[in-house]
Length: 82
Image (cartoon, rainbow, N blue to C red; front, side, top):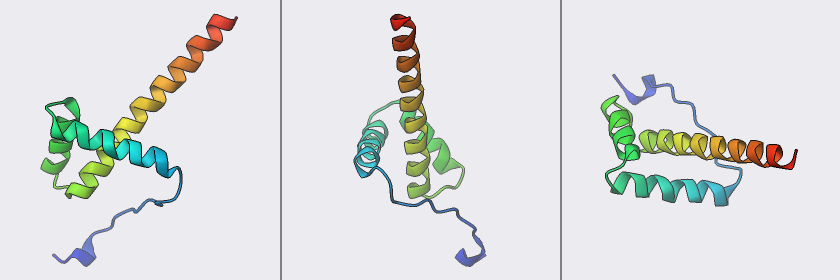
């Protein structure tokens, strides 16, 4: 099997660079310490993902968590104003 047989979807590196950097730093902190993020990263490596792909998956997971918190905060703020 050659690397030419692999089909990978590459995301654009454009966008909010400051947010991307914050997610990168958070992901590295998760990997360095014994956290659920490290377990997730190791699980992705166990699924034969490359370290870069596993890190990308962890960053996506973290961004989903941050987004859910932002939405929940917005909802609670909206209900307090009502």
